[in-house]
Length: 160
Image 1 (tube, one colour):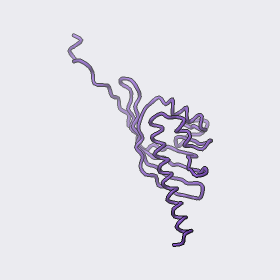
Image 2 (cartoon, helix red, strand yellow):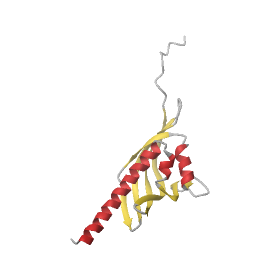
Image 3 (tube, one colour):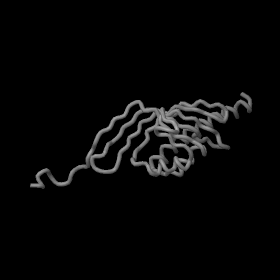
Image 4 (cartoon, rainbow, N blue to C red):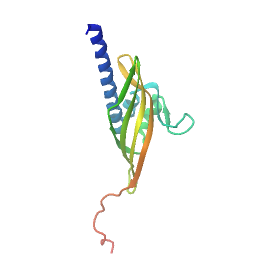
């Protein structure tokens, strides 16, 4: 193997690892509600959307300011459980599919708890020496909602 071939292989490995790290940062920053850091993972005109959303309807968030606001002010909390992305590299662009499970909850007694299983289709763009998310599309395959209440204080007989 020549030095040029070795260098090319090393670049591919570095790109794949950088995209995997980007996906880890995506989950950590969103789950901690760090809107500015989450939005900075996207290109300036980056998009987060549901599968059938358009700029006119559905969950379609475009641009870093709107992305930061969406993350920071989400009405729910949760945790992303992401699988390793299946990455296709093409020069300064890349795509992947990332399977996921998301567990989300809202504040307050008797509020819904969500479990969503699906995947992201993601387009990435290289920006200098780093990769950013250009477009991220969520496809939900299953959603389960349930209601949970906190452990009650006292006993059922206390109100007699």
